[in-house]
Image 1 (cartoon, rainbow, N blue to C red):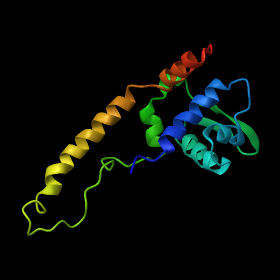
Image 2 (image 1 turned 30 degrees about the vertical axis):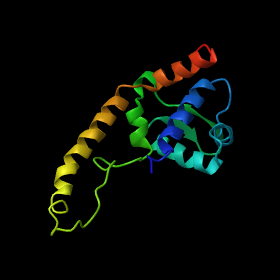
Image 3 (image 1 turned 60 degrees about the horizontal axis):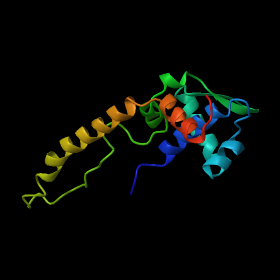
Length: 145
């Protein structure tokens, strides 16, 4: 089991829109790069729009990034596409046996560890911008931004 791919696809969409400034970033174009259905892209675009990360207009093909890339962190994208809610990246199992010494203590023991791990991950994501991602892709492809 892994984190929803919506996060990676959200980053993919934003990076491609920025690198495709001269072209039209339609849902069909984006879907061809992600290798998915345009309906999936439209759903994610709605989430990104709601978060203020992209501009799209009904009936008009194409999208653009709504902010400077340096102002968008990976944490912004992570939160925009509803990967998980606060303190819910890791979940504990329900109803462990209270008659067992492990069962009655496991949740209180591991929940703080899970919370700390999620906060650490989110801190890392908050320190990386979409500009960092696009520059890395551009360097690998020898594209001038």
